[in-house]
Amino acid sequence: MNVIETLKGLVGAEHVLTGESAAPLLVDWRGRYQGAAIAVVRPATTAEVSAVVRLCAEHRIPVVPLGGNTGLCGGATPDQSGSALVLSLARMTRIRAIDADNDTITVEAGCVLQSLQEEARKADRLFPLSLAAEGSCTIGGNLATNAGGTQVLRYGNARELALGLEVVTASGEIWNGLRGLRKDNTGYDLRDLFIGSEGTLGVITAATLKLYPLPIAQRTAMLALKSLDDAVAFLSRARAGFGASLTGFEVMEGEVLQAVVGLFTQLRIPFEGASAHSPWFALLELSDSESAEHAQSRFEAVLGEAIEDGLITDAAIAENIAQSKAMWHLRESIPLAEAALGKSVKHDVSIPISRIAEFVHTTNAALQAHFKGVKHVIFGHLGDGNLHYNVAPGPAQSEGQVLGQQDEIYQLVHDSVHAHGGSISAEHGVGQLKRDQLLRYKSALELSLMRSIKNALDPLGIMNPGKVLQS
Ligand code: FAD
Ligand code: ZN
Image (cartoon, rainbow, N blue to C red; front, side):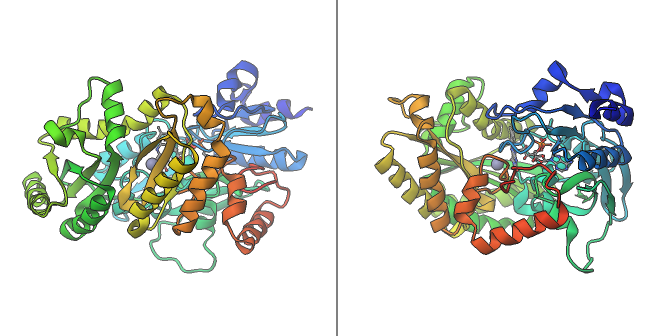
């Protein structure tokens, strides 16, 4: 019996997709990578995942795990050889348990992040991972890429939110590590090895995750600032002034927001006059455990003092949920505006917060010296030291001119990141996009330890080959 027939026997014929029904799942979200596969298989249970991986191990078939396909580094797209099997977790969406006293939820890997947030809310709890792709990305994909998002400042990355995992190993065995423990020092942390491994060590099939109390009130404010240096200085003050209730601190270059409102004319920057044309803006979120009035008065006190001291030039506090949503909409529309304005060379970098302004000044200057006229599109999660530092064609340039110099631009920006003690991938992962860049910035020892782990957990090299590390 051939492999396709065996797979149909394992998961049901209608869940083995080939030809046109598989095609949309073989291209990544940004349309940068087009792959080919024997089939896309959609098992419904952990036992079915195990059976599929066992079959693949037996026949040495590469397995590419697929969640919501929103990853930005081509990690879920197979190569073009057509020899791989794409293993989609889309049917594994069950909430297995909610333990209110333990503040945990156990869910299957294919559960869409937004559904998971909603299930938590029904239980009067918060699942705090939040990102613009939450309507499509899955918790399995979030864990596999150790996703970040807009509340990392307070609650941490996906890794910090996971207590336990269930994993199908590269040989098809099922590891039940679904422990709901906040303390467990019993040897090597296997859970943390699988988190962030982008499907190269095994398939995550379920997770036990931390829940938090729902905030009583949330308040959003937008700030106008003279410089990124002022934003960094104000961040320190905001952390001291707001403590744990500061759940978000985003920054956006003024020109980036001007492009957003120029394109999406229903949106507006919530300032008048010169403030509406500030060089930088910040977006703050407070999650208060007392009341909306309490959040409002804390905002007024800290922001008022910062205005008096000249650290921020203007502040707008959202008066209701609609205004708060409008502010977040501005921030979340940046990637869409970027996409509408054409392709750019993207960098998802982190820098120690104390060096982030210096990084931007020196890298902007170096880019202008080497690639005169390019435009910087800078925004991101300043509270986490994470910037999306993108390079787009200037008014007199074509998309092709900038993309044609992509490798040189990567190198300039990433060398600068490295020189400032930063990381070339803060939250999107490595996938196939940044795999070769790792060789430049990781030490030989670090790469060799990573390869030892890969060989130990996946000796046949069938788990998502060619991603993160060269196969
Ligand atoms: P996929 O794209 O399907 O897969 C991603 C990687 O994980 C692949 O390597 C895949 O093989 C592997 N994988 C998927 N599921 C499993 C599994 N069950 N077991 C093992 N491996 C698996 N990311 C952030 O961190 N922060 C952001 O703020 C953010 N914003 C975004 C906004 C937009 C508009 C978009 C399109 C993306 C954004 N991303 C962001 C990137 C992306 O959403 C996240 O990386 C997300 O976690 C990917 O989840 P997914 O289910 O779509 O995974
Ligand atoms: Zn981001």
